[in-house]
Amino acid sequence: MKVVFHPRFYEVYSHDPAAASGRMEPMVKALKEVFEFVEPEPAPERDLERVHGREHIRSVQSNPILYEVALLAAGGAILAAETALEGQPAFGLIRPPGHHASPHSCWGFCYFNNLAVALRRLLSSRKIKSALILDFDLHYGDGTANTFEGSAEVSYFHPVGTNRDACLKDIQRCLKTRAGYDMIALSAGFDRHEEDWGGLLKTEDYYSIGEWAKEYSLQHCQGRRFGVLEGGYNHTVLGQNVKRFLQGLTD
Ligand SMILES: [Zn+2]
Image (cartoon, rainbow, N blue to C red; front, top):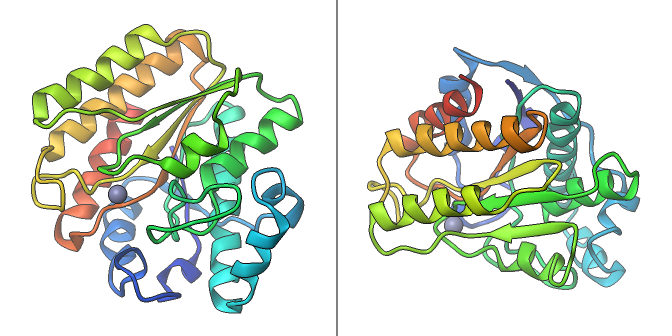
């Protein structure tokens, strides 16, 4: 497992909970004990253009600090995806998050759709033919769903379920029924945790989700699996939640 991280993700690039001061530090601390860290390069603009319109890119560019950090986040997703392609699971410990970023608009603390940028790059260079996205954030990733709407190559799934059991069963059902993809990509949001906004999942559930995704990848995608950070706002529990998820994805 390689964790993709850049010190600029510590920067408070915006006034929103994803950009809050002190959010990344506990995750870095928890993961540094266990996993190898690598640094990404900024995403090339041509990779952004595979997902986003020029007007949208320009609107993010109007805030230079935000733009630089957002390019590194997209670059982090690219490096995680390419590491997975080479046979090693990887995780982009990145911000800003991306799943509410659509081709021509964004909201919800997101600017560029990191996961979509990474997958489009692999798809357009024919390194993969298809991908399954499992987004277990509390919130529906409308940006990702919009990006791949009608796509025969990429399937997007977000579990419903108003209680813990139903949510986990929904994820298992997805992984049992959607076969035939080259890669599994995880939009990993931790805001559904019992001590976060969603108040639903336990820390050990993230280990299970990671493990199920690993098993899916070994069965269907030659082990190709990676994730990127989306939401998760309780700094006290984020470190453990991300760590257990990655241990499940690795073990
Ligand atoms: Zn969320």
